[in-house]
Image 1 (cartoon, rainbow, N blue to C red):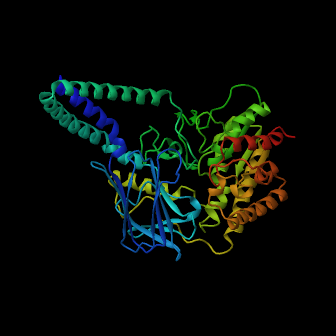
Image 2: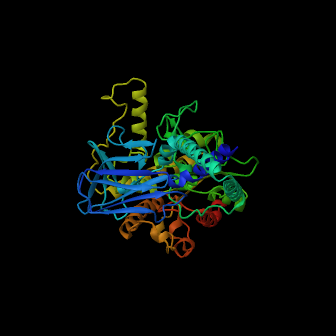
Image 3: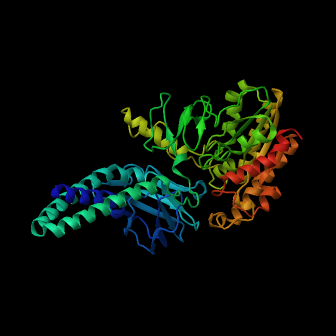
Length: 514
């Protein structure tokens, strides 16, 4: 009995305590000299103030820091006056955990905000680090740590149990009365603490959510028609290849953050005879970042207008993909109104990065995943199925070129809708730079120059819409957005629940045809 008591107490305490003391370290090897590097980690939904800062590290420097065992995501922030910083490798290590990202796996899983211009070349991960907020982020660090976490806890608990049993047996032989009382007190305290900890986990207040930073729920996974995962990244939002739009939402998804019906539409389509309004757009229209129970502006519009709403938004979509969606997927539903809630993706993808207008937002991501699948099937690594690098951009003003390409697609959408007897409305989506920022929004990197360039982009599109008699509304220019002092944005472009409610309020009269 004495051996069992000692082993049980020590094993249980080690099992509970190990996640808080487990030694996990991250190491970043630089390939170029950099002004400043920050390694930040996220445990909940937000990157708060947990970070390690390294000033003026040289090429070849190994930057290392310990991180909590319950780390979910890592962010690597780079600042470099010359303009580009390069990373040779990133490694996460625990006792039985090891994950490494380098040229051999092309840093798969590390992402960046679109406008920062992340590029990969040679044997390094290179990032345009002239922006004060330039970063790469990996949301799959939790998987790497968890791969060995149970083994580590079991091993430590077993070792602690053996030591506890030996100490208990030795103590009880020498001082049986005192030792029994001590063992009883320790056991009682341990059991009470374990019960209290378990009860608090069940009924205690939820953990502080903090400020949003592209949570795990909206990370992509690429699957085939049978739902089999093709991508190395194991996200919760599944995407399918599509002959018309490159990719689309996989049908039949149910998550605590979102529901996608059998047709690939978020929240499905309400039954009834009320007029149907179809909304196309990118991740903001889709409702990227909303927490469980929060509704998109589409769902709010359905309540306020009495019409049925169909949310056909897909993360990363450009206007050309929206046009293809209208023609090939939405026409069978015969909507009475089409709403294109967009603008940002076309501007962000085409203009500032000097990419050709045919480029899809997720081009590189899908190109790499197609290459991985190609290799799994025994393909030649020197003959990838699609080019991994973007072709050289054409000459001229990129913003003017992309705005006109965007307007061309709007005109085609409008012509199709009118030809099918439907109304068409363009809602230029807002960005955080168009409003009075709250304290949370002040932390979002978004320059005045970038905001002005987006306004120039929209200005060109508006003139084209006016010339084609297309009805439009600049949502970001509405005073209910510009003068709002409360937080409406999760990041530079994605809206929180309050932002979606505000957009629904602005769009409701136009959707009703007023």
